[in-house]
Image (cartoon, rainbow, N blue to C red; front, side, top):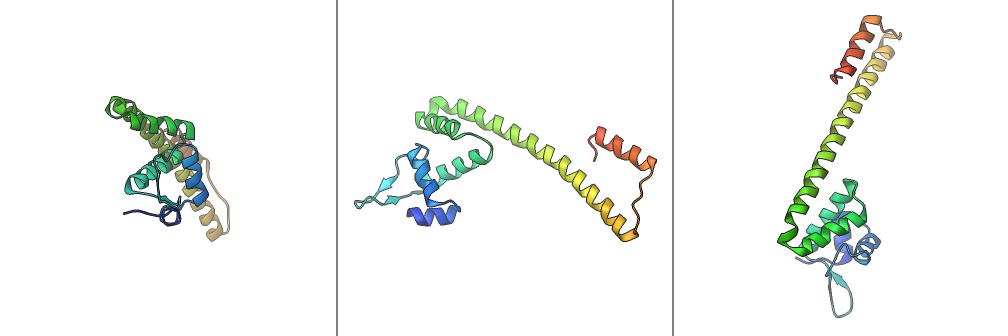
Length: 142
């Protein structure tokens, strides 16, 4: 299946200027053009665009994404480099998720604490509670 720039932008939730920018920056390469100059995107382009967006959201710079695309064009000799890149990115994202889980646990605890205070009409916490909370924080159990 093939897509116009507008169709692809809508389906991928990306602006048409972003698609043009990616092409100008050499991230989307070898885009097919009709005789009238209009871009036509193929399934291969859709997969590459998805990868570009994934790597961008994973915190990679456009320059590093361009390096990845260069490696893709090299073929098999660069497979190990690409593999290492995705191993590193996966480890980074897993650590970010773990960090966000800790943040979420604290937010949930605080929200529940204040909800109980609103329901009871008083704000109370005893030293024993603080001790348990501190231990949970230190032990990464919260």
